[in-house]
Length: 205
Image (cartoon, rainbow, N blue to C red; front, top):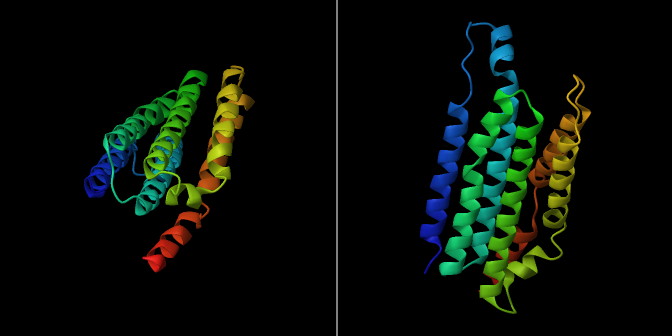
């Protein structure tokens, strides 16, 4: 079957995820900048990080399916698994913020990021397998350095949060957040591999 329905469904789910996340932000009690920072400040930063991650997945998902002509049941289920992991972002984002970046919520947030990365990798693998030995997606991804290094950062962040103490400094928690932010920054930087593959494919067609 063509990819249009899968892409439309995925776009809708991702839009809903972003909407739910922003609705979780707390409204300031007073019409002042101090109230905004005190009430919404940390939540806005956590929302921003999760928003960037959802945007990264939407962008990569859109580009990836430019190299896919049709989908089958395996791709549909793999895509649903990815959407399931991403749909947990509003919950893990809100829990992390509501608890003031406590250890367990930060660990769960990191696990959520790791599971989403694994689900995306599985989706890629299912598509590549369905395309056969001359898979255009495989050729476009190449060694996929970003995809391979990202889970390492997630695991490092999860481990840092697990080993974090409960003191006011909580260096392990901030090290974990730094790992998660680093991956987001790495993926925000434009990646032209699939763009080039789509352009080359169009020229060959």
